[in-house]
Length: 467
Picture (spheres, helix red, strand yellow):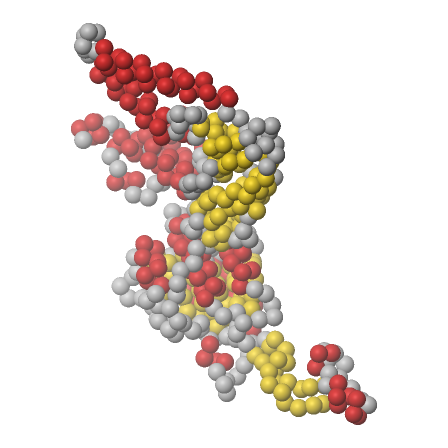
């Protein structure tokens, strides 16, 4: 504790940034060396190295005659390590691999990848594993200089000055996926073809490019391993946002489409109950022609069906998180994806509205598109460069005639967001909001539901049936 207190942390942010710029090349190259060694030294080899260092330290303070057993143990370990290193060049593989990826993956959930592996070498391959290499997760210099680790102010002066935990936090955030353990090794005869499975767990939504497949070839003692790149075409895996289970709910405006209500949404065409027969009109679809009546009368007759109407709901996503609240935005995307996955798009239409570089409106529902389309869009949505609440309001107003109601998913709570909801409601649009926040206010406004980022799944299950 005294050591930490004796270290002076510059109060001037510019001085701290300058010190981080000195640390950056050490952390950047150190992370690369660490990654290189961890992929080539197996746990048993790491244990042997640690034991060797401990034994060396113990033997250093003893007389030679008393240290003979220790030196013998150290010599045996070193000999084993040298033999393992000498055996590595003889571990070779020449493979041709084709990836067979699933259509989608989900952030935070393991996914199985299938590989079609062909052994191109003249010798059989034994005791080898395939593993995917995540993209480089080392942050850029500008990101490291400007980063503020959550809870970093509670660390001691030494940790705040050297920012090592901040560096690790940035690396962890940028990591695309975790590689799972594969128990079954590759066993391939010369020229043989085999199907191999591996598991990864995507860390975040978006597109993951897989272009660095490696084969791991351990030495006979299991201390070290070769890590050779495999010839395989690159592939892209689409990772959808994580979804949470929701209780039964009705979106705003659903009540307007009960029997006897005024239907103001767009129709999907005549697809209801049979009403009667009438003469053909130009533009009537051929599937509605009543062939028996046409044959009897000699005039084209069509079936008249009752028009079916479906409510159209707006799902408004706030892409303007406050600085430092980017995690709230990711949770807001998760909430939006949960509603998209839970709404029966066979009985309604959903307009996803947001601003990310430009105004975006994506529609899914009966006769228009699948709910997976909205999930794909949410997988790639990004934070807007600057807040544009007025533009978002105008976007909703332009589609107001088609909407039965709106559900807004907000990344935090502020006066601007409250004004946005009030102005949309004043325009005559029925609207409710779900606000992702750190802590809800003591007196929430009506039809505004707050969910805590730390208790997201639990708070979503407490939402009322009528939003």
